Image 1 (cartoon, rainbow, N blue to C red):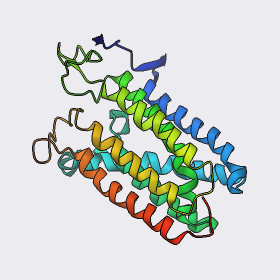
Image 2 (cartoon, helix red, strand yellow; image 1 turned 90 degrees about the vertical axis):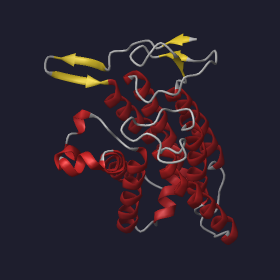
Image 3 (cartoon, one colour; image 1 turned 135 degrees about the horizontal axis):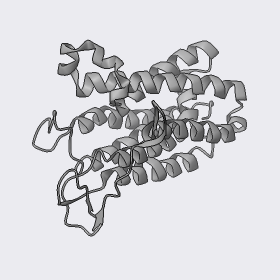
Length: 262
């Protein structure tokens, strides 16, 4: 059994200016994505200017989509009473699924701008995303949020602010699966030419499986609880379409075997 090492969520404090670890994790995520993205430029015939444009669109998609998704998916009743909630980002609250939809819209707009096409862009981007997911989960751990159910396993961790029972450290589970393992799978898979849509399809499928499984031991948002059957969470519900589209994209990619490679 382990005890949660209480960590100050504020990394740097300079007078009235406070820099939170969670915010730093976002900066680290974008930097890692850009750095590993430069390694893929030559492989796909892109330039550094293309990567700069992509980074700008991704940042907008993640921040705007993540915030809007959190408010609509997880706090919609509160939003109806207080619409300005969507602007108060400093109070916390970002949704992965909302951020993903925001990035999809951004990639569609970028594809129209540069003429590369939506799936050619997402196939390039997909292997870089787990780096950001992993950094975000470390941010969740530092904040002491998104803990799991009570467990009697030796790996259980006591979060003192929740209670004396050891719990699944689901933030670390997600870091290992959605961050490290997910990155290795996509990076290795995309290291060889693949049919268009294949990398994007594998991304959706893998994330869907990892997130769906971890939700079984992760405590759902208190104000939502379980959506149905005393076990289905909002995270699982939002993940189901990802699983379906992931299988569909892989099937289409290998059925058509287009000449364009990711």
